[in-house]
Length: 132
Image 1: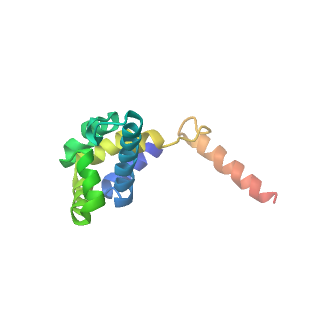
Image 2: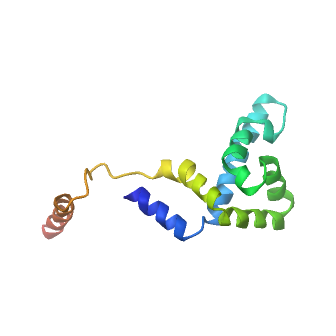
Image 3: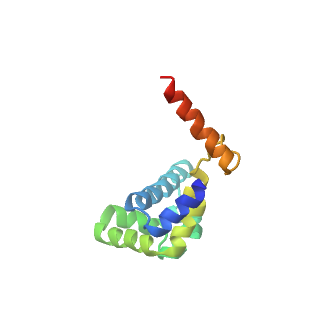
């Protein structure tokens, strides 16, 4: 249920610009670390750069080095890129599957969603309050 609610909420609303920027910065950070360790190459040749292009870049028409350039040197283009990412249904689906979905935690105390379980959870809470 938590995952379903997350998907429905995200589809009804656009991805937040902060989430998109965080995603870009995550892949840029991973790519920079790879470049530092390898001591040669460019952002797009790293594993992070290739993964970004395969998962996300194809839906917004940019590779990781272009994201880097826009982020650092062209704020207007970067703002348009974030807007394009917000409006891309495929980009949103991919973010949901690869970034948001794995982070949704499910309550281990809820084994099924029937009326008895719901009563037990609320009844326990009510009893706890009554004794305070």
